[in-house]
Image (cartoon, rainbow, N blue to C red; front, side, top):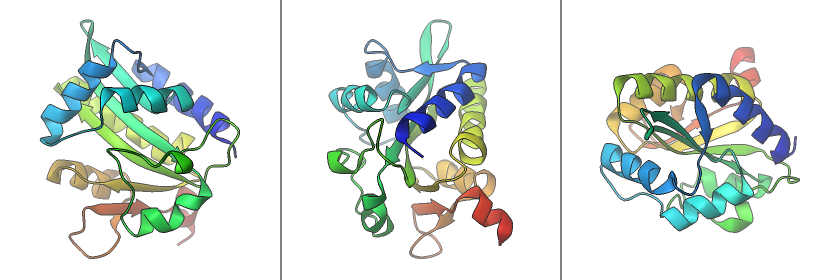
Amino acid sequence: MRAKTFTQAMLAAAAPLGFIPCRPEDAPLARAVAAELMGHDVVSVPTILAVQTLQPASSLVLHEDGVVRGLVATLLLKPAAAPILAAGDFNGLQPQAHLLAGPDDPVDFYYVWGIAGASKSASSAVVELCRRLRYGALASLTAYATAATPAGRRVGVTQLGFQPVRHADDDLLVSAPAEQRRAA
């Protein structure tokens, strides 16, 4: 399938939970929430906005009381990303533009670019949207993530079907398409 089809499915999964595409005025707040909760450097606002232009569902935000309190950032990647993802060489701070799927490009992978919830309710909504993407909108794709925190790694492994790639305590995680996991 093409990126535009996945984008429509992502937006449909996000809307009932209150998530909307990140607007330019949301990006600094979304970045701040992610940086604070992950405890390390995160992608720049210009990069968030550039990717958002190419992939309208790449950064989905949740507002509570008019403030960004949740973020689910997901990159749709072309088939050429396979060796780079598997080797752990994907650069989340500066995603390689030639690997990002445009609307008419085929998609084989997605990368969990960042997730953050700044309140209990936002955290619950973030996990639920990730679940809906993994087992619904993006179920046919192989997913990769680099766990930034122990809590994020735990959620990925226990709730979203991710497994370490290179060794048992690896922070690089992969999740096979849902159909393959069911058949195994």
